Image 1 (spheres, rainbow, N blue to C red):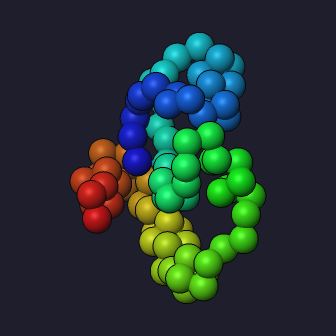
Image 2: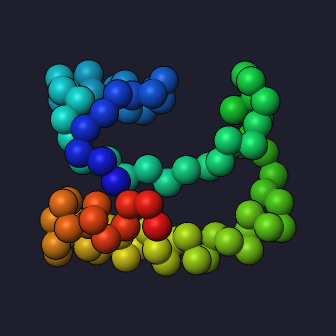
Length: 86
């Protein structure tokens, strides 16, 4: 969870920043890993999940829903303090 930052080459964030005309907006990153070769991001993102990745999904989705609930009820700063780095 962050309150500002660059698009990091992500087209969706580039578009959001263009529409908002700022890099200062709250964002929640749900990562996909970096287990892909250079230039192979599309194949990795759109590829099949491993059994290990699937087994971790329920736990990660539960944590993500807790984070989103915290953001709505406790605000961005409390949420960052509670969830970042964990």
